[in-house]
Image (cartoon, rainbow, N blue to C red; front, side, top):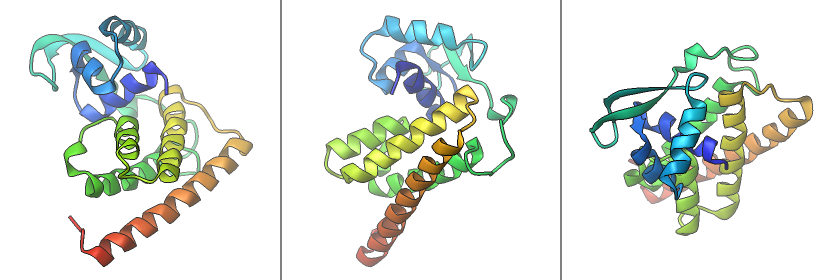
Length: 181
């Protein structure tokens, strides 16, 4: 995942605006200067930068805010396979499952959260790989307006099938063990 994608995910997960310092902490990008450069390049097309209160630390500083999704035109009809809405629906289901698995991780960028749970052994490696593939492709569609080719769509549908199977197994396992939240 690129630094650009990490920054966009952090802003999306925050639901508000974040300063460069908070983005650095949330994304794990090691250099503050790198975050500043990425945020400056994202300004206008995907984000705005203004002095206001950061939703992360509360300081009144230069804050990056993601433009609302409705400001970006969707490349193909709503909820058709391969659209941002289609990707977001699956991602919402995955986030609900991750919230059951790790309630303390709410608000953390999706990819970082999946990688952390995988590295801790709390999420199967294959499931984590499918989730990271899904979100990477979703980000290209959501943030770059990419329209999937027929071949890409075929692959994404296979990934969706694997994730659906994992979600079904996860839900069944939680029902059996009484781990519902």
